[in-house]
Length: 446
Image 1 (tube, rainbow, N blue to C red):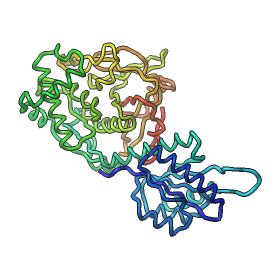
Image 2: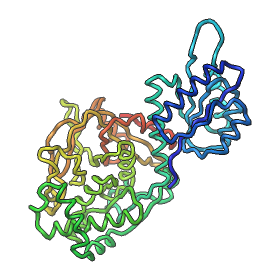
Image 3: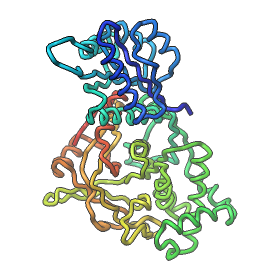
């Protein structure tokens, strides 16, 4: 797996104030290294085209930070655009001194020259940043772009698994391998649910002892359920774990009903919840793009995300409740009573997760949506998860959007969004907007 690489390309010409340029260069390097320790930087500003060309031959960027350390004509940006097709951030430095004397950097004119030639070369999709390396807004914006570009890089190396098919009427989650690769760069692995059921049944008791120990440590009340269901669940958890490890899978879209109730006798809900707790994005009802949505949220936060349906709205409280049968990560449970276990609300078979999710001051509702023409768009809504007990049998959380909840619901329905969403336990709206831009997808803010 290729390591994500940020490459700093500071361009300029020697006819401007080099003392100021070198000072900005050193401060920019310090900032970039603090945000991405492996960032590749040159020894100094690249003030000649030959120096720039020589440097470009030594790097393999996944994100280019192209900075006009001073003015540089469009030939410099042309060389960079010719060399690399990866995401690019064009960074303009603020003039360090305005005193009626010499123009020290003229970085902004250089940025206009670079932006102009990028458009003429057919590369209009780049990020842009204005400000000095000591400004907090610059640090924040650079961090956002680096994190978003890192996720785009990871998507191109991602293995997603489709375990079984979507149920009838749930086609919104179905995806083709070519579509997934073309839009995101990811690879799709497919396996029938039956194969993992058979694998689960084949284990000897000692082979799933670790999974049973882990489950008892995380799940509250697991052993209150019928012993045969607990054992069947642990066997299935072992089968899923072995599969994702063997194939280097980071996101799973799994068939659930009716197969696991009818043919296996135990739901897959608890299995998916445990995978989510271990940062393998696991969506039920074989929702492939739901799993991809979860994966993006997990990579941006390094924490589990909630996956569920919008099932209730309270106009007075300005909240929307998200719920699902019981696949949430144990670590999302409220401390009291913890990650309790129960039975499926319809089938009355367990184990399924049974808890309300903990509060979070900052949260983002997110969905990778597929449009009727086959292109993709991002649903993004900032808000908070409020402190609320379990709302319905299964797992639930109550989201309070920054905007109007009724508008959130009305627009979401009328604009044709899928009924599954991820709730991310952080404000990552800025990163998601940049990622959508890097992937060439529509940004829909709610």
